[in-house]
Length: 60
Image 1 (cartoon, rainbow, N blue to C red):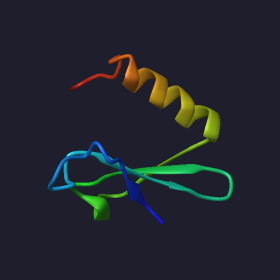
Image 2: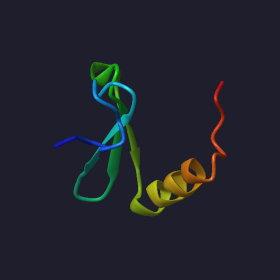
Image 3: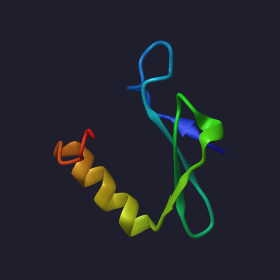
Image 4: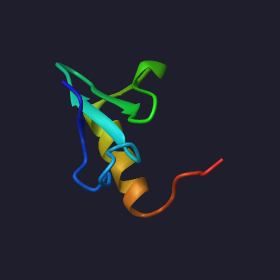
């Protein structure tokens, strides 16, 4: 089951959603949940969070 961050705002459409599955963490865009998802290893998801918190993700 996907869940949103409590920081996603009142409309809930300005965030990503995550779901913890058996061996991966799935990530999708809350504005377009039908548009697909990315599956990351737990370690890869941890690196993603570290990069996001450090504002080191590309905005292109």
